[in-house]
Image 1 (cartoon, chains in turn green, blue):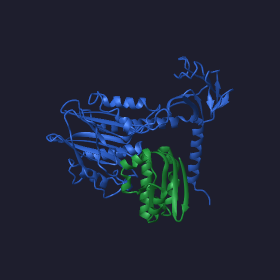
Image 2: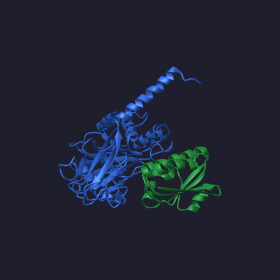
Image 3: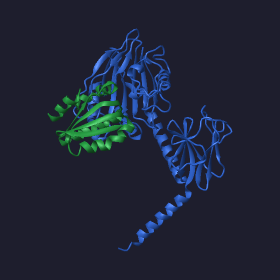
Image 4: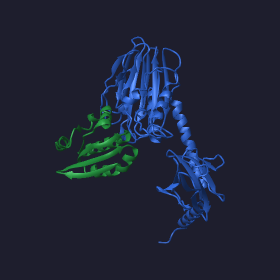
Length: 112
Length: 372
């Protein structure tokens, strides 16, 4: 699992590539959380490179999104496709975490 | 500052204990198959031979393993591996061994599809691990004991198969009568697997079995999901959430009322009709307070079979590394064995046959409910 973190105009962009299964989550969870939660970031998360998401991947995303929400930050997901989009839909994740089609709409939602 | 007498004694005891532990350490060769240790052999004065021949100390039934493949010896406290001219070789770190080679602790060599790992363990550690294994087996037996027996007779029958991916899993399900008119069936899938997921699924199962949701009519799936969501918020339960499919069948009207929380559909197969996906939109239980879960209903035709299953039943990786999906899994349901005894295990065997070797990636549960 690869994770790339950058920042542009106050929005933190997290790019994920690989499988968000148990080893994938183990590989990034601490760094992912540390990069966003303490600073109450406005974050967009690029899921275009994620080919699989399991229950632990969903759990990590929900936990970080909830922690951000409590601190006044926010998380927007964008560009899920195929299997990952199907899992997010089944889990009704859109009800608590916005999911956008691309980086531009995600960034606009993060700044709003 | 001078150390106190008690401190000195404590240090002395610790050092003594550590020395005793060091003396007790022994080398073992552990056979690992599909990522799981399957045997542990102590290394002593005599070398251990490894091969396909039944006369070897360690027999590996693998066509890529020669009849006499390699030997492992303990020489001056070091474990040395020597390939004995095998056809397909012995590998360490991807390199084929060409001469006797020291195998350090916690490292391994590959022989065919198996790994042979060098472990340095004390007798005390081995006994501790055996105790832990026994405890896990007891816990597994307890979880299994909570799953209801299949119902073989009557107007509504059940068949199921459950196989956790670890010793303990996060799947659980149950069914039974709420009153003479209403039958309930549900399946819970806790995020992750292993001990913490199993403990959580047992908590949920016991709340439902003991009818311990205050002010909730268990015949109303929406109320049940609302009540569970209030009771099992992630922050108060170790960061765990769960998905759930919950349905209640009313005998007189043949109506099935159901609701789901972050779970894929249950599938109702009626004779001569395409399968009906039964799902309501709803967030997984525990992810956010204040959710309102709305139920839906379906008419159950005579001869129908309802299938509930966990995502581990279809999120399977093939031997080629491809991800299987729900559509492929649905092809295994509703065939000529629908509603027959052993159908759920047959489905498991078919899923397993199409998956890469070793345990499945996630817990597997399939529950089939057949209606006269």
